Image (cartoon, rainbow, N blue to C red; front, top):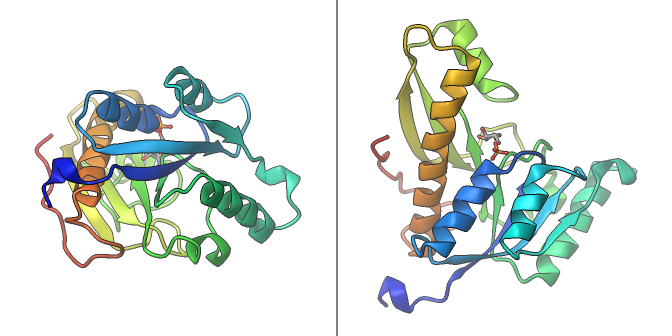
Length: 210
Ligand code: GRF
């Protein structure tokens, strides 16, 4: 079946903050560079820019605040219910600052991806850009990977390398990192939308030039 004849991919996006990666997805859809639709955006924090971006694009957005739940499993169960009601097929973690439990992972087996600002398995966890600068690496990059129970440990789908330039600070590197991330995330989603990447596929996608 030709890619254009496929039904568009139904996405659910989890965010916690700025949402520039969400914006990259929304822009790619609007500009017909990605055959997908964002059915639901969920933020675990109220008042974040990501929610404004969703609403500006006419996409349904909800706040489900983790603090209002007694357990991580109860929070994840609420996320699952919301995404299932929205008939979402794949989940994108786009700056979502919570670790998901098996309650969530089991509901979307092999269909959850995350974007991380480092060449995993280097520098998992928070402030990967700061970690890379502190270590003094000369090449870093970004990764899109399947999500498992660990922190940034799932199988890698696609990566883009990024040089650390002399004089780079956190801001300058983060700025270039975001540009690379936005391209990579849309690239990975296109691979999924076209069926070239299937749930937990073994195929590694060659990195796109930055
Ligand atoms: C990105 O660097 C992403 O890799 C990391 O969190 C950041 C989110 O940025 N997981 P934004 O909210 O998409 O602008």
